[in-house]
Amino acid sequence: MQQIFQNVIINRQEINSIEFEDESLEILLYPGGEKTFEILITNQGSPTHIHLSVSEELKGMITFLRNNPYVLHKEYVSAVARIPQGGKVLTKGQIFITAGYGSRKKGFPVLLGKVEAKPQENLGDISQKSLDQEGSNSQKLSYAPIKKAYSQRSGNEGLSWLVSPFLDVLRGNFSASVGGRAQKNLINDERIRLNIVFGVFLLLVISFFLYFILPESFQFKVSFPEALLFSIFFVSCITYILLKILEKS
Image 1 (tube, rainbow, N blue to C red):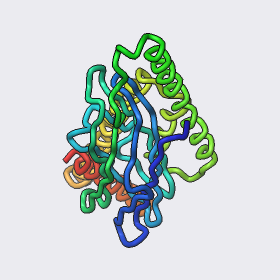
Image 2: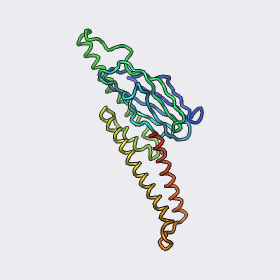
Image 3: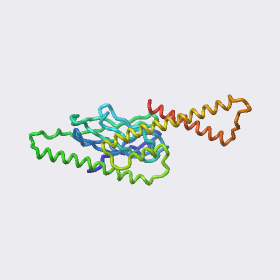
């Protein structure tokens, strides 16, 4: 079974331009089934964050393990598609790509499910059993391309510290429970990182005010390299906090 795949190209025509290699994506799945697929983000401009989301029809049915990746050149984003037991046999919706911190948004159609209805019970137990077996085999095979894709990317160097924590989550095969735990770990890591940055920011602000408030006898001397390092940390903290605020909004 071939891997379900979409290639998204950004910054090729102009700044924050978004293009799709395939006009639409079809994910063949029965109610109660689950399948993992990948989206390749190719950036032909400056490194940037992009955001992935789905339309209302697909909410709760398609989950991205990373919905806000930082793309240097090429980045693979894994997603899990599932149809609840007793859910719709066929659902039409869209996957959206947002670039330029919200300035540009574009989507492509997604067909989730099967065009034909599930075989009726009067066809017999044999046909139903073969269908269930085919579905379980397809689920097992769908996880194999993830490991292969990751091994091709493991040789890339120069990834920023913002990307590396997320790449560790992609190692190995993904089941439904692993996908859920990975998503929770990503959220916890984001909160911890934001708390650390916010704490460093407060420490820098307090140090800045103490420099002017303390009496002259208690003031500490600051050299040019120390002042430069202070400025770099201060600007980096403000930039990171503002980016997180924009992502939440």
